[in-house]
Length: 67
Image (cartoon, rainbow, N blue to C red; front, side, top):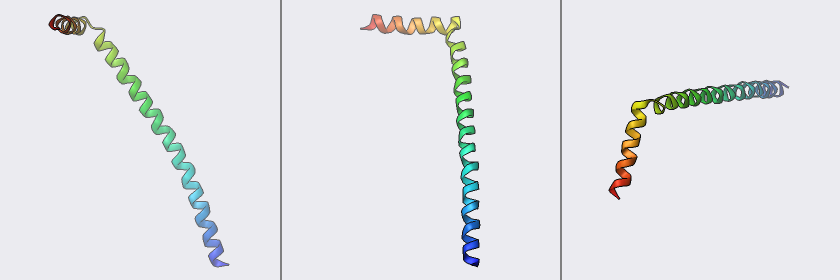
């Protein structure tokens, strides 16, 4: 009898832990997605700047003329 109660308590505890872990995984994916979007936005802002555009154009021009 005592062993059965213990096993039931362990089973309930494990079930609760699984539910908490599943929520944390979803939250981690959400934070990762937001970080990726923020990084993409910053990268777009940098690439659209005139200085970077000119440097990229120079690199491409040099590569095309070298061949």
